[in-house]
Image (cartoon, rainbow, N blue to C red):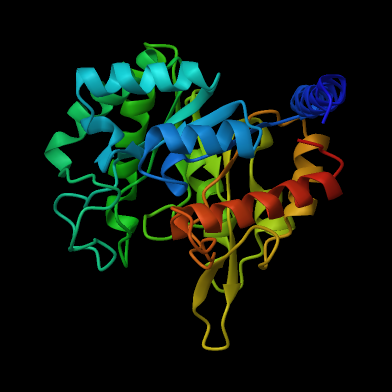
Amino acid sequence: MSSSRRGFLAGLGATSALAAVSRAARAASSCPFRLAVINDEISQDFDHACFVAAHDFGLQWIELRGMWNKNITELDASELERSRKILAKYNLRVTDIASPLFKVNWPGAPLSRFSPRHAEFHADFDFKQQDQVLERCIALSKTFGTDRIRCFDFWRLDDQKPYRAAINDKLRQAARTCARHDLILLLENEPDCNTGSGKEAAETLAAVTESNFMLNWDPGNSATFAGDVPYPNDYDLLPKHRIGHCHCKDTIRKPDGKSVWAPVGGGMVDWVGQFRAFQRDGYHDAVSLETHWRGGKPEPGSNMGVAEASSRISMKGLKECLAKAGAYC
């Protein structure tokens, strides 16, 4: 092949690559949301997770939960510096610290049947350590340049009424602590915790009125409650101005009534309707993939794990739902 021919083809390749980058930049600038993924839903290898998020998913945002088989709250100074350099390498910004705050048993109450026997996401703390966990998360928010910390409201009790006022007060205190640092505390509705459904989220938000106490709305989690319809029914109950983050996953209810995870767009959550409603209601914060589903098949001969293969499928479904809703991200 002549040198001129090689130069012509190389030029075409460069032009094509630049066009692809340009299309990705236009999509990112027109996206009404902070499209993100939780890093360890791809891989515990943080550099690889960021590469996939930035280059393959075309994202500018990422949510941090754990890396290198450690919970984010357990990273040492050298690991924090390493992770900051990796984020800078891929030009990724952090949506929030997806912390394990308050995902513990409530003291004095019967032991929750939802309390796991082993640590979840490499987090092994008890109630007495929660103030320290919050302090650590506040420091992490400053390290990673985010104004949001995710929390829960303790492992689910069969009867939470005797303890609900005290639980709310603990959330209220934590929100006030965060407010002193100009931070938002995000409560995730989690079926294994006391605020699980959209209805329960609305009740908790009504009780804990601090303006920086907001909801990490998870329609997929709400869908695990029999009879719950995350959108539009549960969403209609929520104060829209207090939704500060959204986790994206999907679920299928089996004939026996049990729920199993599914890729986004492949389950019972009306994600297209939810994204249209977000745009109508002026929501512009994160929509972050929390895959959970593990049905993806790694490509033969690749080093890809099941989590990454599943997240690739689910991100594709998420983007298709966004496009159908008129949000091109």
